[in-house]
Image (tube, rainbow, N blue to C red; front, side, top):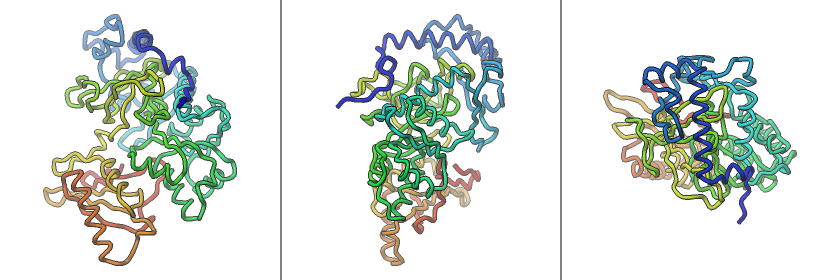
Length: 438
């Protein structure tokens, strides 16, 4: 099989040449942040570290970490390394746990973003003859405008559909005949649900590929999306703080996410000690921006959990690959001493017949004991008032969750379409211990 590569010169660069390029770019970035960002100058000075002490990418562990709190503490523009008259775009996170984190882009940053997003969708076989349907939200969230930028960089006809109004989205999918779509995986399933409910076959659409991210999703959900929308589903990874979508991407091999290493340097660290983890070991994902001008973050701790994959991909790309992140260290629930990721529950449920791909975890504390309730939505076909059948299915789901997590959870089967649908990231957890929803 021949694999489509948008930029072979960059994406198949020999590792020795890439190492030299990364080293050159890191040294220049370190000098720029030291001279222009007070936070970094102060931290370097406190450590007795000078930009002259950084000679290659191998020296990156000498540098301090950057935390999301640093962006909040320097809200809105305190970590920018350029004056505001050089900034051409601003984005911001949702700000669900405090101040929004604000990110800026220079004209050069925008070109980088367009390039890495073009590689991302190009890796799924997209060329300028394709038509793109962008169902990520447009606005301060980076998904919609970032996805559209990648599509336009390739030269595709691009439909800025944004999110919501699923009936209108499906009409566009039918009439405009886009060949690829970008959306959250949960919204892709909402579209599939609408098709089923209205007797519309996915075969009537022209979709060949879908690029899904902004929330964790499992291999079982991939299979569900591919089966119901009749396309090939690719995982994409990004963070607003680094650039938005386009930090890493799956190719047609669907075997790990290729990191755009000529722009973003990947480390995996032990979240407790901050020390590097051996390749193949799971830890916290850390990124350093080595080409960004407006907001070049150094060793940014993402709180995402992942690991590097060894060996070169069959597609021929030389970039390092990482596994699909298992979740976030700050999304992880600790229930009766056990670490629980929502993605683990999703993996269990998606393996079971008669279960819709929508669920919520409700965590409460009764006395000193944590209690986990899993709301599990049934499909129309499965839903029944026969108590015996419902009880049997509830026991089956409870046993499956216990076998994976090692803890007991109360399973509550709920009616089809009773769990709230979200146009952006799905809210999987209601933690009543802290009143946090995420």
